[in-house]
Image (cartoon, rainbow, N blue to C red):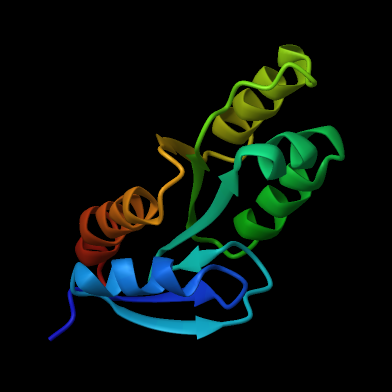
Length: 135
């Protein structure tokens, strides 16, 4: 019996789904309209390196957070990889992260940009939050 089930956006690497399954979760690949993964009561976005900085600069991350918040689920942002970028001023990055925490009530989880560490973060979200949520 799976620990819990999770939907993973079909644009994410297959390796991520396999790594999440290895923790005992039932994984379904589907096109998600909000977030990169969704559990019973959780939703999360995964941002890797340049995509993170580009989504801060163009405002996409805040729009994505709004869509995720509208689901009524607990929001998570998994920051994967090196978050140092000399092309981007730190002020908008810090402002966006603070907005995600205080305005959208997101939890932010930094990990290495390796599918296994991203999968472990998803596993902990599903195990620690979704498994304790009453149906």
